[in-house]
Every structure is written in C-alpha cells, then in structure tokens.
Length: 289
Ligand SMILES: [Mg+2]
Image (tube, rainbow, N blue to C red; front, side):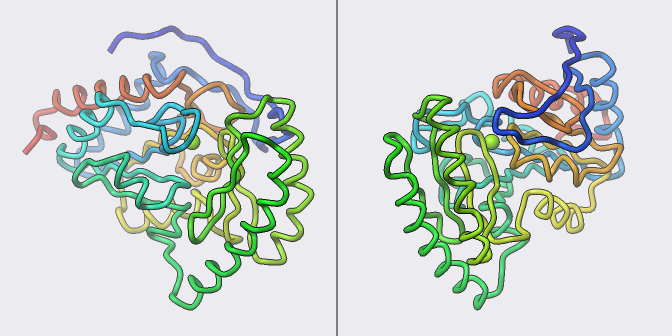
C-alpha cells in the first residue's frame, strides 16, 4: 500500500450552515497511521468485518441526474471480490429506493439497505407503511410547488420518502431553494417527516429514520468485530456517529464531517477496496474459500 501523503484537513461549518458537534481533524485514509488503524480493524480474524458504503458520491460519482449515475466497473469488480472473502459482509446504505440499488450494484451477496433503512432493517409495519406512503404523496405535492420556480430542480417520489434534487442549480440558486425548503420543514413535521441532507439533494424521511439507526440495526444483526463506513454527505454523519471507537469512519470528498478519515472521491474508494482485498488475501487464515 503506497501512501498518498500525510495531509490533515480541519473540518468546519458547511455552506448551508450545517455544523457537526465534534469538529476535529480528519486524516487521509491512505496515511500510514490511518492504514495501521484499518489493518487493525481488518485483522480481527475471528470476527466478521462489516464494510458499508453510501452510494451517490461514494461508490458512484455524482452525475448530472440521478438516473445517469453509475458505479464504475472497477469498483463493482472489487466489491465482488470483497464479498467473497470469508467473514466480510458488504452493504450499501443509501437514500435511494431498492430498485435503484439493485440496478446500480448488481453484485451477488452485497446487501442493499435503501431509503435510510426503510427498505431494510428498519422496515415499518404494513400499517405504518401505508401511513408513510400517504404522507409522502402529500409532501411530494407540496414540494413540487416549492421547487417549481427553480428550473433544473425536481422532485422524486420514492414511495416511503421524497427527494428534491438540485444538482443542476448554481450554488446561489441552490442556497435559495434550500432556504425555501427549510421554511416548509414545519409543514413536513406535521406529516411526521424531517429533512436529511445529501449532496445536492434534500430528502424528506419519516422522523427517526436515518443512516445511524440503520447502521446500528445492521450491526446488532451482523455483530461484526469491526465496521468500516464510507459516506460523502450530511446524511451519512449519523452513521459515522453510530460507529464504535475501533471502527473506521471515512468521509469521501472535502465536506465538513465528524469522520476520522478522508479520501478524495469515489476513485479512492475503489483503491481502498483493492488494498483491503490484497490485505485480507495476505493473511492465510482469511484467504478466499
Ligand atoms: Mg452520498
């Protein structure tokens, strides 16, 4: 594993005023110290290693429209190798609906947790699902009105949640739209929904559902020796916060974060996967069955 340098960046408040309680230094994941922590986490040979990834901006580069996003072939190939290692579980945890995750990550044995766990370990009862769907439809109608003046923004109805995408907007227009969306949050609360911020998207999700809760439920089921989670946006911060001290949290990109480590972009996530597979293959007891 070669080092890409020992840079250390300081996190800060986001452009939209988002802040994360514990501001701290993040280290390059490929620094010597960080890689030692990864090795320690991956060498708990008797216990399972849980590898969890956000999708957009993490496994897949952000595309001009969500439908155009693709996970690079090389990344899919490394995921397929990682999932075949003994005692390694690979999971994608995303805001997207399950159908999207099946199309974008067509790798056998990768677990897909969609819509912040609503399609996954936090799946609500049938009665709750009906209530969430009804509320999501009403919220979507209201959000259409809010987004209509912002050309290039669009609303995605995901069934149990709703997204307002604004990838095509200039930073100034995006800030104006996000201010309007903040202004209607009390209405969303009346429907039992709250905001989760992604990269150039505002998601509206039933209160209490976030990636932190999804990761906690997943860890309770998998009972891993260590967890490594990669994510790129504010919506991933609850997952970072849900990790234990020996786990490895990795922010993808330059955004503000409470994660301990950082990589530059999705290409580095593939690089990490290739290094991890090589690392596990070097350990005789952990080689592929
Ligand atoms: Mg993302």
